[in-house]
Length: 109
Image 1 (spheres, one colour):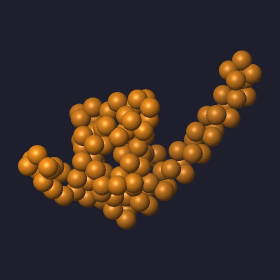
Image 2 (cartoon, helix red, strand yellow):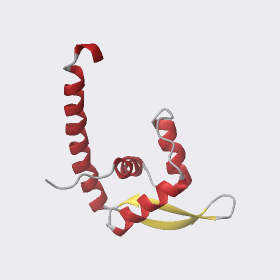
Image 3 (cartoon, rainbow, N blue to C red):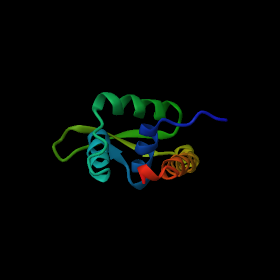
Image 4 (tube, helix red, strand yellow):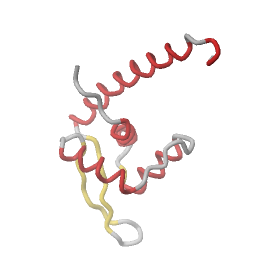
């Protein structure tokens, strides 16, 4: 069986499937969309983005922000979309299995 993707990679790819984003935007959107369950730090995000870039799942470009600073934006590649689709299916299967075990114990229900 192929090694499954780290959940942080899955979350980042999911956000980038909706729109191109810069680093801090990814952090704030993840926290907002997860109802503050995930509070990713820059020290966690940037190695994830670098790994996804190195793997060909994302590409990046620089664009000037309204403040005049340059921002690095990230977007999914075709390979990234394929990877996201595969890993989403794996995650759903995994979470379904965990839920099945949890719901089999009446005291936990």
